Length: 477
Ligand code: ADP
Ligand code: MG
Image: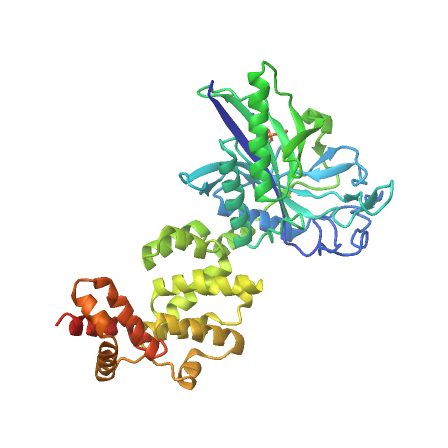
């Protein structure tokens, strides 16, 4: 029997607001426990939540970016359950009427076909607090700093069919939320986490199998491995004549397996009802329009433009376009140097390596886009070779100087004077009679040896194309 996995993801993206979704307490990460929880976050009686407009604006922006419908009117509901990190006894979320409905996202699975995945909905909700099990012997600490942090829960259609596709979806979403500057995407800090719903069905069958939900996956690798494990486990259960139980499971990275956490409550166990403390959310037309106007060119469109206008390979274009700061930097470099492909190469290879080495973001690069463009302009106009440019780049990186200053100071201009190069060619030929003989006897590969000799004599400053040409002409005489 052939099995087809079916996967749907629920992703919680923490919205980048300064204060919480229903209170004025700060959302900054890493504060002393329980210093950032207001009476509202603590669920004191008699206090009232006030919706944070910034959270709404970020949700609207997301909706527009995925081609969704931004609901004119949506409702906040109480999702009732007991847990020590939830002092109110309910989480404020959106249930029947979410703020973002529909839309889709293009994914690029590794080694597979790109395709679109439907997004069912995205709704606003508050995060809960955090239980700390490690620092207290035999007891659990509760940190409520996180309580009330604004989240956008983004729910996909059950349209992915492999762990690889699920990871590609999560990556595409991660690229998008950072691009829109609605979420910092920091997975270690819990700003972007994933619940994966997994089922399998006989290939060709339309009805879904029973699903399990793997909670709180906070890395791409864990998502991929947890789903892969779960697919295999369900197939084993079914092939062994058993049935899959609908339940919530946890992934244990140390053992690389999922384990049951609790059987899935029926949705109505949460006793959702509209929160009487909050009015329906009515998104003003002006807010939607303002967000629409301010929407940046999106990663997919930008990638397509890089391929189309600059003649880049799709993979190179993707690497540049999928991070907004990198894309901006790249376009500035290309503008200054006038050679878009050369710029792409340098940003993706030399600059990326240097940034990586020092653990820096492109926005903090010690070599600005204008300066890198200035360096590449000197390759483009033949002043220096690509090889010398790498030396110059290293100096620019450490000294913070312009390329032209370094080129002049160190006498790095390329030797393009034909007379001078011819003289060097003569010297090299005279000094290596044996190789000349071998070359002329048919060992054409030796041309590289001669070029190398001339380059060595000039510390790499001879124009390699010219040297090649002159040598060939002289040797083939
Ligand atoms: P709940 O609110 O109980 O978590 P939803 O119906 O909202 O359930 O679905 C949550 C997620 O589960 C969605 O991403 C959806 O695509 C996915 N999903 C639903 N049914 C299945 C299934 N049979 N197999 C895999 N994923 C599923
Ligand atoms: Mg769910």
